[in-house]
Image (cartoon, rainbow, N blue to C red; front, top):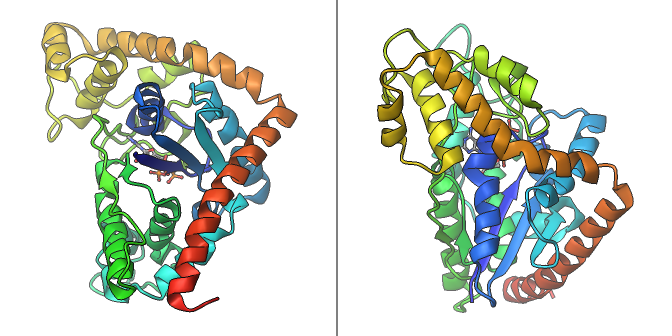
Length: 340
Ligand code: AQP
């Protein structure tokens, strides 16, 4: 049987990128799962702390995220939905993995390298100053490996940007299995789900992100039709005829990608259909399909987020189930390393 694991950070209300790139796929996975598949969806609070967070905002985003996962259609009876930080086994296993991971390997992670770019020494471009970056950010992929292997996950639906992290996870699983001459962990596979990367509406050279400073750069699950339209109107495009060209025309291409993803069409077909139309027509249609896609989950989210007792209960039950699985893994790992 397959064990499918994925996660999201509680760093704000999910945006269109999170929905089209990850969350909608989770729901499809749940719908198409075989009877003996086990599904786990984790809200990664420990990971969120790697960037500065306002405590009150983190706490409410953390609570809201359970409501989001339920409102898009995840079923707590079918899938284990839980807060990572409700299960201390995540950090316990991450510590053991930290002690097995060479620094050099983490330095090669592209996510770390991109952090370093922002930490370049202002006076000397060639000298990278990592002294202000926290250690949590450095070992972020190790904690992610612990998240996955704690449940002996076999399948991990993640975006392309996470492939290198999954490779590290497989290496760690393999290292443990070899060192202790026992098949403790499976080597988890990347699950290829067609998931587009959605770009910022204001700066289409970077991805849409929960924590980017400009609010108009993203469409959030809570945005109503008017807000979606006003953000769409302000989306950066160009004045050439509409065409699909990710390299030279990322803004226009992003809108075509969004439209195709929402309507489940081939993006080249969509591009052909709009080749004679104006950008304002495209924007209007994108706003409409996005609003249509979000209408139900948005209403469900607004209803559910007030049901605080129910949400707490769902989190507790999920954490209980998660801990009962990870307890067995931790006992096994501790026996192997000698901590018993
Ligand atoms: N722009 C995007 N397009 C497609 N997929 C995306 N994901 C994130 N942004 C896009 C996918 O959403 C899942 C959950 O992401 P996460 O919360 O764990 O962290 P992230 O990737 O760092 O997402 P954000 O929105 O940019 O959050 P912040 O701003 O807090 O860092 C992942 O599967 C991710 O690939």
